[in-house]
Amino acid sequence: MSEFSLLDPFQAATIPLGDWVTATLNFLVHNFREVFRAIRWPIDQVLNGIEFTLQSIPPTIGIILSSLLGWQLAGKRMALLCFVTLTLLGLIGVWAESMTTLALVLTSVFFCAVIGIPLGIVCARSNRLESIIRPLLDAMQTLPAFVYLVPVVMLFGIGNVPGVLVTIVFALPPLVRLTNLGIRQVPEDKIEAAR
Image (cartoon, rainbow, N blue to C red; front, side, top):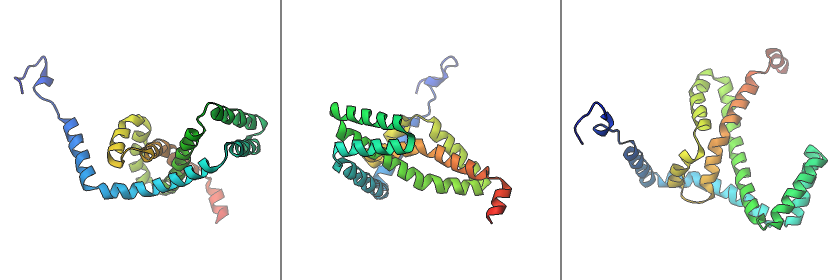
């Protein structure tokens, strides 16, 4: 360390935050490897199952089914949009990669629903829990994904599972908030009538 200077006080005194974070991550990786493998396993199984299913559907059948689903859910324009975009994905040669990405998104949505809906219900019933979780949800929504992508990759390894986890962290807060808000905004007379 150098001598303290009032004009440049940060040269003499620094906080080694980077060293602390590195030491903490190394500790977690070395001592909790089995815990992270246990967390990774169900995500990997669901992801592989969805990806296998999507990859095993022939592209023509996938395009037809998606177009029919789009037509039933949103009308002719959505059916046409599904048909054109999926056909373009096949024509440019990225059908398999698109199905992998779709599997990642569907897996993330599944785990977000499994975690987010019950958590939103519990938050709607407990003001204390909601006040504790709100800052965490705020942080999850405001931090860029790349901030927590590197630690997640270090803890869970390289592959699609870290992508699913980062997507869950990004997509979970709106689901928890909207579930909480939806339950809190049900009028009392409707609740009484339901009983």
